[in-house]
Amino acid sequence: MPKLAILADPHSTHTIKWVKNLSRKGFQILLIGISDKPTSLYNDVPNVTCECYIVNKKVQRKRKLDFIKLTNLKHFFKIKKTIKDYDPDILHSFYASSYGLIGALCSIKPFVISVWGSDVFEFPKKSILHKFILKFSLNRATCICATGQGLKTESEKYTSNKIHVIQFGINIDYFKPVTNTQKNTITIGTVKHFKKIYGIETLIKSISKLKEDKNYSNLKLLLIGDGEEKKNYIKLANKLGIVNDINFTGFISNEQLHPQYQKMDIVVIPSIRESFGISVLEGMSCEIPVIASDISGFNEVGNTETITFFKPENEIDLANKIKVCITDYKAYKVKAVKARKRVVNLFSEKACLEKKVNLYKQLLN
Image 1 (cartoon, rainbow, N blue to C red):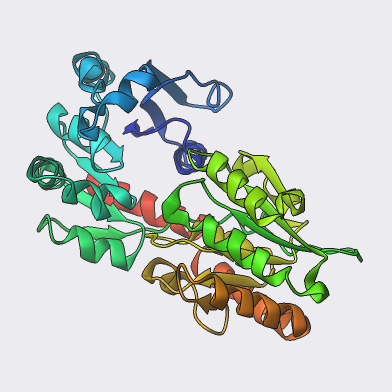
Image 2: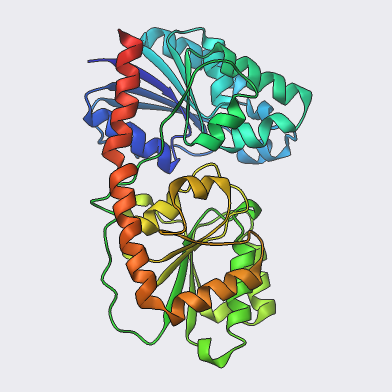
């Protein structure tokens, strides 16, 4: 049984999915993460051991240079020893900055880094030192994985190492077509972390704009997620007089998302920038009409035959696109059926997992 050591955020939805799926594929896994809280998420997962090193969140927030999140480096020598004692066949860092740096300093081969987005789009632009750390980490890797072509292209600015495109897959048996019952309201939904970069402010403003027309007084907004901007979004909704029309659910785990999608008539993902559209794909897989910002990460997962695009940060354009979707909903449901087929053909979790497993097999030969 191949031994895999993974350095990653143990609470990340993507980490959880990869680890559980790789476990089912027969890998023995040591997952090492750094967090402000422990986790029991992997207690019942066969062949998986999770080591979670605890850091103080308040201390991390005070540190302006986020690579010094290596309060992480405070744990480095413990982590290095743990990995050395485990003696993995492959070491894999999920996220190129902090976890990538720790992995690079462990000097274990083969060493894989997965770049996920902000670690390449934002991190190296903060300072010369940040850029140096990213280049150092990527160039120490045996190979690199990117979730999309746009992220691969951006990563190539910092390394000449080979980069494999392996997307985050969708469980098409879980995220399946929904049956909407007759109801008096129209629910617009989104699933995103509450950060400015995900454009939720634009969505709230667009709903407010629509509700100025009494024909759309029955609109409801379902916001699934949590994060640093939540208070600001509630404040904005109060100011616009629509707070009672918004359901702030808080964080909901990936395994409990499908019932939430069942409540949605339209999925809107208004991000300003993303490397890959996992929430877009979930909506598409559920055969719900999807409206998304016209950005490269979303252009990779769909096209105008499967997604309705709007200008990023433009609440008027978004409101108009929502209005047209509601008016001609049957036509948009036909579009949603095409979207589901696209996900099944190109982005199933099974297919993406096989790409990862095949890469590991190549490294072990």
